Length: 245
Image (cartoon, rainbow, N blue to C red; front, side, top):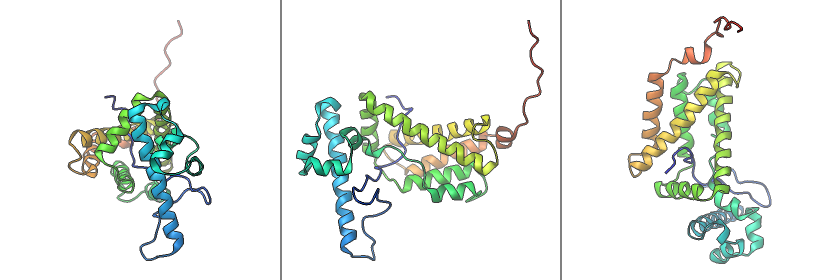
């Protein structure tokens, strides 16, 4: 198994055909309105389409499955399918990883929650994962599928690259650096690698203990190993240029 592209989140919220993507639970615990129930049903339909698409493509391959077959299994029309997903590829990759939410990023960029840069990266990652729960089996199944279908793997890698870029932007904002500074780029890449390492350890251990324990172990190791001031704030090299031959 190639481990470089393990996903970082659970299923992403699919688009709502009438008002854009849902941003939270389908119903408020204190709100028994019909609108809340309607949103819950939409989310359940989208989830069923996604999970069915994943299961069928895992068995038959991407080219061996049609939108009509997915709809038949779920019991909806193709028109309903296209209200949620533009294509079968989008239905399969609805659980692509996404960056942490704006609230988590804002807390990190402002210097929180502890003031320690690497510890706060770990805290942000842990909180993000807690809000996008997945299972070991689901994670492993998606990982296998992405590597069986090159078209899907390309989408997955693009999503991971976008997340790494968002980490770089957050680190640069917090530290007053440029997003393309070498230290910022290196730390963002190490953050991404740390997430993948934690996920691999979690899968290898059968989902025990919780993913937060593995994330904490990885980021504690990073914090103990890195000289952050040197990495992010080292002065430009003053070494003389090599002589011209």
